Image (cartoon, rainbow, N blue to C red; front, top):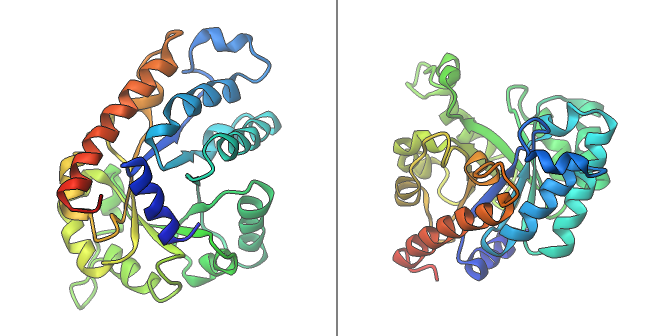
Length: 276
């Protein structure tokens, strides 16, 4: 999926919503535990009830890897189901990989060939050597961690060099030279919405994956105001606020309602920006 196709999906769905599939066996509704594959059944019902309103899904790999082989099976079935019911969406592996050489190349093969993801999140600390194997795949995205919303982000990301440039700003500037805007996205936490206007000056054309809406307290209006560009340029993620909105048998119906609320709000901002 390239940038043009992604923007087409945004206009079709009138949404730039990404649903995070942080599917925890200890948090899903208890009645699902009777299924052969509870995690997949949870994901299936979430996907079936929300895909009309979203342009992306983002499984967080830790929740699947922690379950061993069965978790990887659930993950593969989840990706296949998304492809079947909503082939126009982008599927993101939230893996935050950050290695080099053959290891990085095999990570790229894992996510882009074995599991058919469209994109993967990457930690850029080791530089271009981490990202380059992922860039060898056509119509696939490397989503690079730039400015995160966790408390200890300030340990490194805001350190300034002799030119008074913050580390996260150097990441944004340098990574744009590694690939084009059909290959490179950046992660920017929603709780840092006030920084989005400055980020847009550095990276005006790249898509931004923005986590933190909902349970983490991010403000969608501010994200749209400061982060949107002439092709939207945003994928805004909500995870817990959607998938765990109910722990009862109505969880999928409640997830649909929450997703539709966000889609309606996003449609408003897309209209205000004259993008639809």
